[in-house]
Image 1 (spheres, rainbow, N blue to C red):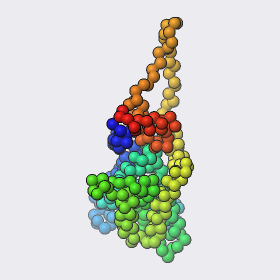
Image 2: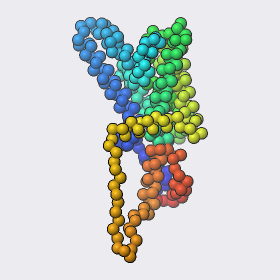
Image 3: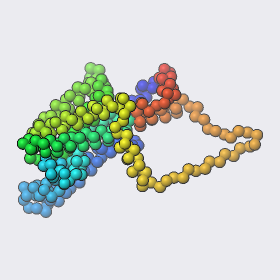
Length: 303
């Protein structure tokens, strides 16, 4: 079996370790369920549906969504991050997660698991800053409403995936496949139509979020990973609550006239599996020179 065939067998599943894509989908889904439960509670506790809706937005939802009023956003700084995980409508959530899964699957397959969350956060954060700053600088363009949803973050991921592999093709059974850049263009048009009523500031915020995805991958190709500090922080925070494991001392018992037994991995297939797992987790750039040589030799023969 050729190496190139084996690479496409690495599927993104719920059971895969460090699956950033599944984590993002899960967080958005849990947030939506929480918002809907609280909304139902408001509707059951208040007789009038109109009053219940207004009260729900005023007393709860505005504390999670990003306000177009700069002072409100400044006094609630957490909304710069929380808004990108909040969806009030089921259709809005569904379409966002479908696009996220489509582009995220491609990006994670090509670059590993540690680029997804940094890109999502960068896109959402930059869009939020532009949205708040734009409404502050140009109050005449201020849109009476709030900013919520992960569309700007998904746009960042979409542009990043397209920058990384513009000629990547999906649905190969259709005339050789649909190029990724075409799918991204369709997504950008749909996104533009969905946010057009939000005013020019929101349009610019989304555009710059997409630009952030392009710059992220451009810098990554130059060897500068803008998401490395986030991954290091996440690793540090995760290990903060885990007890430090003391290394176990290993003792070798052997006869005086013999050398100790050392297990040596001599299976080419096992070496190949380990290298492919490393590519899936950290990307192709993480391979050593020896691993690259082994992979090139393995691609020329059946293992």
